[in-house]
Length: 152
Image (cartoon, rainbow, N blue to C red):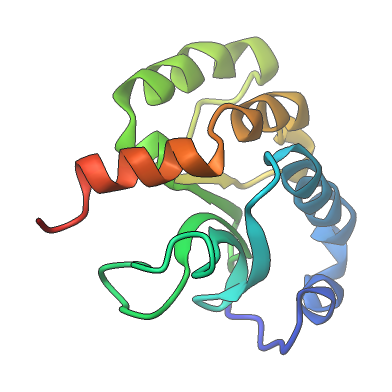
């Protein structure tokens, strides 16, 4: 299920009613806990936070001349998805998150490389997501990105 929206607020309003409150709380959790310097916008059909071109003119190597993505949030057909590129790029951060998750949720962690899936809104560990969002600054992300992904 792709939400067609022209703004972040429109996206938030189009989230299905049964997950709207939890989705908005997750959005606010991410938005309020990312360090300064990340820019919010719609990207890839989702709500996203990236490093603006003014800060990192090289942009994203997969889509030249676009901001460097970092976190995305989406309401999918069967779950809410939180994409966090830091987890994908930093094994230490991934290991920390995997170890902490059971302290915040009784559900099994459902995740891919950068995608954390929440099938039941009551199981979203907001405090853990807040802590995760605080762990990487824009400069940390640029350094990690250039080390791990950027073609030399």
